[in-house]
Structure formats: C-alpha cells, structure tokens
Image 1 (tube, rainbow, N blue to C red):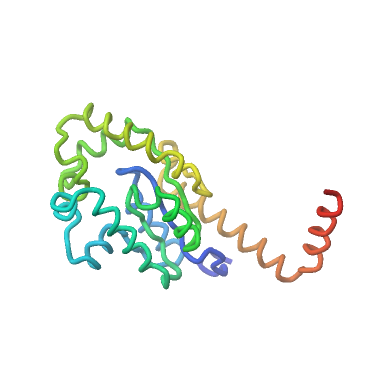
Image 2 (cartoon, rainbow, N blue to C red; image 1 turned 90 degrees about the vertical axis):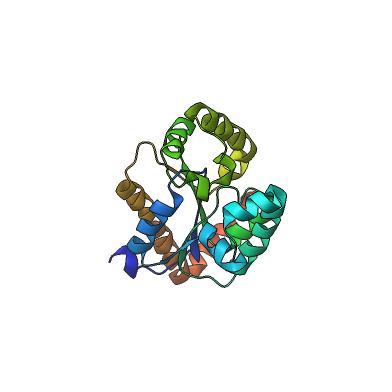
Length: 210
C-alpha cells in the first residue's frame, strides 16, 4: 500500500516557518507525493484581495496587512486535501494558530537563520515577495531582521506538531519523514476504529488509576 492509498487522517497539511525556509518548494513536492493539491497562501492572498502583497504592504502598512491576512485565512475553511504553504507570520497569533490547527496538521520547517539570510540575499524575487526585506541590502542586515522575526515568532513556530529540520535533510528525506508519520497515524486510527472497545477499556483503566 502506497501513501496515496492510505486514508487521509489529516484534513490538510499546514506548512509554517521563517521566510526562505522552503515552504512553497517542499509543499509542492509533498502535495504530489501525498496525492493532495497545493496552495501557496501568499498567492491566494493576492487572488482574493486582487492586490500584490508588496504593494499592499507598502501602501497600507504591516498592521493593515496582518488584519487582511486574518480575513483571508478564514476563507480556507472549506479546503480539504491540500498542502498549504502559509505566509511566514500568518499563524503567529493565537487566534490564527488555533484556526490553522483546525484546518489540519501544522508542520514547522526549521532552518538556521544564517542559512535563511544567505538564501534571501541571493533571491532575485525578494523585493517582490518579501517586502519587509526590500530595503535591506546586505546579508548582515537581513540576518539581523531574521533574528528580530525569530524572537517574535519562535513560540508560535515551536507549537507546530511536527518539526522538520531542513538543514540536515534533503527534500526527499523530509518528504519521507512526513509521509511516514502520516502513514503511522492513519494505521493507528484504522486500528482504533476496528477495536473501539480496547481503547475505551484502556481509557477507563487510566482514569481509574488516576
């Protein structure tokens, strides 16, 4: 039985992480591997609002952007069987994190800040896709900004149920790690459905001991 044949026990896979951590790249790969659709939240934001993120950010400011982002996030409530690459700060508020958790399994792509800084400074699309870095010219400036973001967001990122370290694993390796977790979870849920009385007795026994 392949992963694609397994019942989908997670409504969606929600990828979160710092800018440059590879959410979109890995998301597309895992969507194909797991038989899902792929959704890039930043592009979805632009489709819904009919505005480019960089332009919106520049004209309206970050506070207005985050407020609009919250509204767009709620439009995902009917999405099923997707891998969703979230914006770097989308699920970093308590309300958004809880909403995303109801949408599916939150997976944190963990990447060292030094690696992120190098990727961003070499990315020709940075000014278009990452407006908060558009005025920064050196790798040192970008690293300083990343450290600031990490301090503000790390608590939310680390609440992700699955952590994938992108520094030491290839995309194929990360794909297999997440796929194995999904497969084991699906098998466990199938067993629970076929043996509900065993789990009920186990739960009752634990409560009795407590």
